[in-house]
Image (cartoon, rainbow, N blue to C red):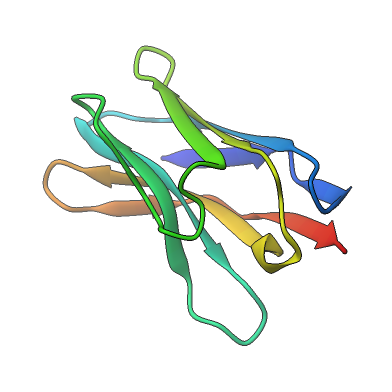
Length: 116
């Protein structure tokens, strides 16, 4: 059974930093991408950042230059370093894995709240 466990969320003030981590277990398939999505109240879930197994990355325009995604493929972990946080970054952040055949797996989510 695949499990993704996120950690590192919390409450910070604008301009501060947080580091989210996700550890995946039960992986028995080839992972294509690992990443982070977020969902704010009343909004759709949106992509924040992904990293492909070749190391290439993709970021939402709203977080470019502030967030950095990294991955340890051997340990099946993915980390999101979030700097210069803004109130509009407030959301539940979800860890995600896509397999090479397109199956998606999600974590339970971790709350990030940025106060102004």
